[in-house]
Image (tube, rainbow, N blue to C red; front, side, top):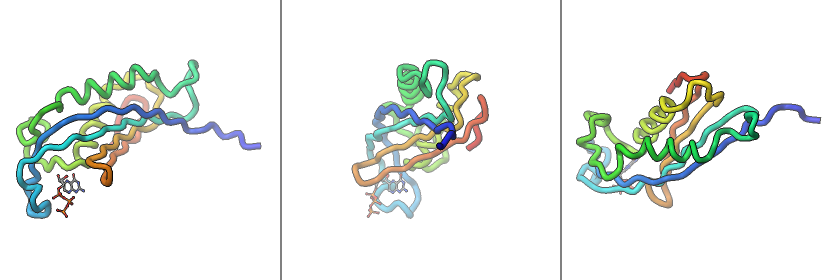
Amino acid sequence: MIETTPVFRLSVDDHVMIAHSLKDPFFGPAQRLHGATLAITATFERQGLDEHGVVMDIGMATEMLSEVLDPLRYQNLDEHPDFLNKLSTTEVVCQHIALRLAEALPEDHQLRALEVAAEEHPRARASARIELEWGTASA
Ligand SMILES: Nc1nc2c(c(=O)[nH]1)N=C([C@H](O)[C@H](O)COP(=O)(O)OP(=O)(O)OP(=O)(O)O)CN2
């Protein structure tokens, strides 16, 4: 009989509309200013469940993701202070959201990782995963 405590994952979704330009010849026409609607999934991971039988409360996870996305909504990332002198690729946006979520977690979160995925269009997705150590994040 297998007795290992499972790793559980809870995911919540949201979306964010942004504009940006990717100022590197690598990106061809996307060097010009263009818009994107990113469908965001945040996944929280925990070994075992808490005393309520959950990874974390869905309402709390949904609210945290929404609050982290609020400063990005309808923004031109070329002008956003957190993306100055950065290429705001989907990967970099995922990293940014993941770090902000990690910072927003309560100190006693007991999670072991979180992951943020962004769907740029139905055929392209990127994600960033952060391993957590009880309140501290390592990228
Ligand atoms: N790994 C990534 N590659 C690209 C990203 C990204 O965020 N991560 N972003 C873009 C553009 O912002 C845009 O989403 C797509 O631009 P496009 O020129 O249409 O790029 P494609 O690679 O889809 O198509 P091409 O055949 O290269 O024109 C681009 N890449």
